[in-house]
Length: 309
Ligand SMILES: NC(=O)c1ccc[n+]([C@@H]2O[C@H](COP(=O)([O-])OP(=O)(O)OC[C@H]3O[C@@H](n4cnc5c(N)ncnc54)[C@H](OP(=O)(O)O)[C@@H]3O)[C@@H](O)[C@H]2O)c1
Image 1 (cartoon, protein in one colour):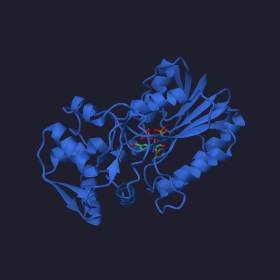
Image 2 (cartoon, helix red, strand yellow):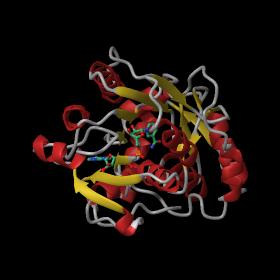
Image 3 (cartoon, protein in one colour):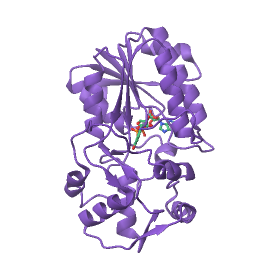
């Protein structure tokens, strides 16, 4: 089948594309980063997103059976917003429908919520509703937090543990997370592209950690001993702002801290992934967190590949 994947030169999109090619599918990608290195060479042709020219988007999607959508923005910024990402995704969905695409496999988030003041979770809820109303076959996968060599969160926690004299956690650190390995998610997507059933799947890994346990697990795997202290979320936020100034990034936003502390990265569902974060960290303990991974660098530099840790 001819499949369009958004962001095949990015993080999850690259793993998904790899899995789809292995399964014998033909893959094209839609991206804003045409100048990033194409790890698939001539096997994957890249087209610009063209959110401002839906007729071009429609033409590029002609002949595509399934669209796999990873497109989203992590936080609101002067260069990009969730509101814009919602509007763009609706343009993409509509172009897919008009181009005759049969099915959309869409990456969402755990606990999307139309009533939430947090634009990430509210925007994702709006997109899930919009996808369901489209009338195409769909599969929605809701990851909590991904881990893998190109990851930001787990790597940067490891970086903090390696490089800071003391590491803070927001509040008591008792809110939970269920990280899923990016390639386990990619495998699930590759399986779902050819199915017909409309479904929504919680995409979580086999282990659940409280934030406190996650920090302790990473510290133990790296063999570093650091005081891990509880700090009020506002102090934690301003400390991260300061670190952000030093590394030239937005480490975490107030909204992300709130989402984390509300327990939105944990759901009551059977695991989809089988790779344990604990095992993965043990395998990558020599490289994990040696260097800081900058979200903003990825957004501003659209010609380099995502760095792997
Ligand atoms: N990463 C996680 O831990 C995590 C956790 C839960 C849910 N998810 C969901 O999984 C999906 C994929 O996440 P990912 O981490 O694999 O993303 P990614 O590869 O970094 O980006 C996916 C796509 O979104 C585009 N994009 C990302 N940030 C953008 C920005 N600020 N402005 C414009 N375009 C932007 C990328 O553009 P280019 O094509 O130009 O690179 C790419 O096409 C998202 O829908 C996300 O909500 C991710």
